[in-house]
Length: 200
Image 1 (cartoon, rainbow, N blue to C red):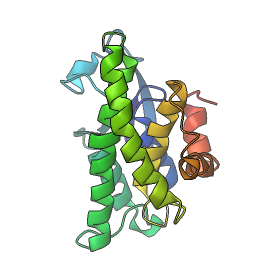
Image 2: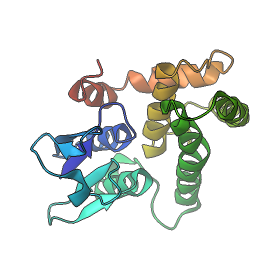
Image 3: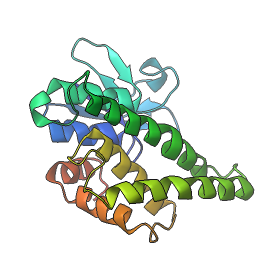
Image 4: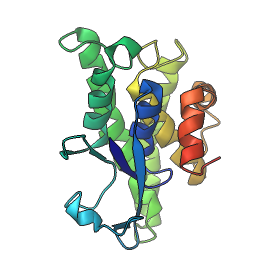
């Protein structure tokens, strides 16, 4: 499998999932400025909307959208317990968290990367994020991971919290969140993914 990625972008989440799964994979970096890959491929030919992540499967099929990709990866290695079994309430809890992260955290953080978004809008987004971070802080104050045991949702949250650090969004009032970030960062597979993206 080949993962198309941008260092530190949301493609880090499936990268972590691949490393945690112990699967064979290759990486191909995409340049956001030119939308070409390091091999010279037009990335719009890979994903027509030009966004990472994109996972090229062995048969040439392309899978996009992080929450779908990480579940696909987890289901390839059920013995790793990166996602609960399909059809269980626990699996729906995983999907609940993945949807929460993508719609309530990811989408609120993305505008902070644009200089065109007015400061007033960013202030409103920070107020929205505060409630969501408080919820995460409450959950992670009760157990180490979102589903108690590490899952692909934790790799996604780790990625998003890394954005907060880059964007200088203060998380000091959420001690369980900062402890979680350090806990996930220490995992060998996460260290591997970070090294492979040149982030450490």
